[in-house]
Length: 182
Length: 306
Image (cartoon, rainbow over all chains, first blue to last red; front, side):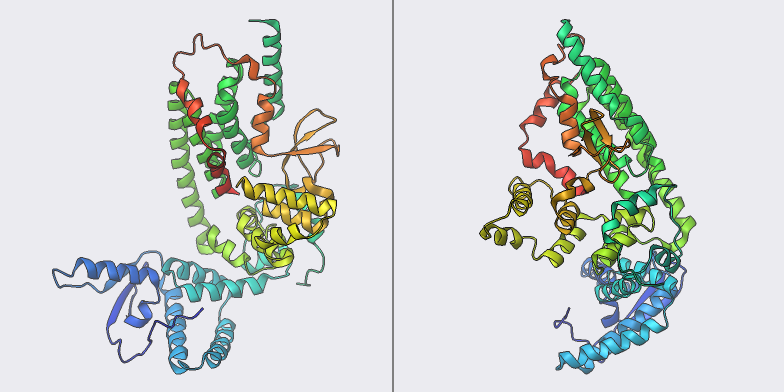
């Protein structure tokens, strides 16, 4: 997953874009960061196209489905992402190693409940790299775990009626071997 | 009305009643399949069935729509939508209008309830496509396991594309495996599996990748595992399957798809086509338009839900 076309040079993108979250917080971010959020980019492009004739451009973009908490984390992640990319523009391997290192550290500070919020925000913003990263993180957290562990991890409750779960379990008895201890 | 005809009609009615639509629809996990069966029956059989049975099917269709708000899954909504499309195509004018109104009410109620539910649970609920995305990083055991967390996860974990990926990663490329198998002088078992897939690909019907996976995983012995409906030889009726047995524990089961269930209802009853005496309000054309569809096209709606 490489986007060579982007040139994340911080000096060239001094333009700021303002994002407004559902809880009415305002974030000012560099254009390069905002353009990683495809939903924002789309909005931005549409606005610009509409305003070509009039020459005015609104840079305040409302994000009614995103709260400030996950957005702040996403912006930090995105900045770091661009920075690592810029630092290792000519060495892809180096970049991947840096990225991996950063992502590992990043995950240490994220609670399971936050992860869900982050995924929802990244999904709405259509920020592909982050969405992929968080989904992989969730997947590795629940890989080979018991059903009870996964429920607890996500704070989910079973909505099966009595007997239904047993039925499903029976149906998939062939696959229940070698599950990790919780 | 001839005696033979009356007898055949009674038989069709009996066959339909044995499906137990009324009992199946309120169950969350049977609802989508029951809806699919109903819509196939509407499309394939309705016009050729006796009046009594027609009105029974119509009532069950309305019941299905009324139950929709209670079902909180996307699969239920899409199954109901499929049923709505079939009702629109097959039902005569008056009934069609009733069904459409019922469906629209149900859809509004369903959405309202879903929204309320989401608010209640907070942001914890991930949308289906994201869940599928997450599950695509898991191995088979884990996919099965997360399918037991709750119903919405179960539905995500049953995603057909997900299982196609699993099939490809465990048994090799799903597209190429057919070509490879072609070159192997096959054993009977392999051959059958191969024929099954090949057939599905050439007729462009939907492939049940989870079924294909399980069959390949534990061998051909339990083909019935993934079907939820089947014909029990002992009971002589269509039954819901539980671990490839019928509820009385019989094992002589032929699995039935919703499409086959519709055919079953129609079975040998095609000779009592309703003489359209008082059938003035029925849209004669609608049934025939349907038959004019190429087979592939007709099957695509189901494909989308698998």
